[in-house]
Length: 59
Image (cartoon, rainbow, N blue to C red; front, side):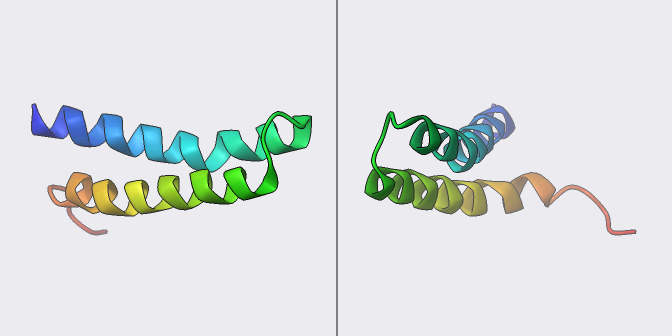
């Protein structure tokens, strides 16, 4: 259950780093809003991603 929540959060964080760039390009959101959303997505990604990698072994 926790792993599913972490995967969902990491996908949301990844989407928040990609989608705002396209929205700024199309003129839907401002540059400041884009920066805020991208920062939020980056923080969310870096907080959730390491816990998903915990069970994998290095090469």
